[in-house]
Length: 152
Image (cartoon, helix red, strand yellow):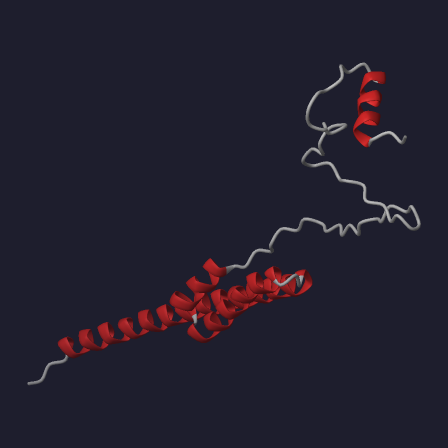
């Protein structure tokens, strides 16, 4: 007469120092814990399949210079500021799509456009201020000469 699996289990448990269990068939060993891989073998070859691990470096999103671009857009030079804002918005979208080199390029272009617009704005505002001061001086001189002129 062949042994039933239940009887063999009871004998194995008794050999391991466990008292015999009555009633239901008990599970041997411990249940798998979270975080531990479960080894699954191919029963035909006995080989444990390996998992493909993709290692990715953690990268930080490049600076987008959005604040500087908006400042240039509002205060310095509208056309250059628009291009700078477009380039600054490309940085985040390229970085999220995984194109780190493209994000770096867009960041560099946004910085260049924004700095160019800032320099252009400072120069143009300075030239406008000088022209305004010269014009004001010319008007004051002309008014002063008219007041000194005797119309009689």
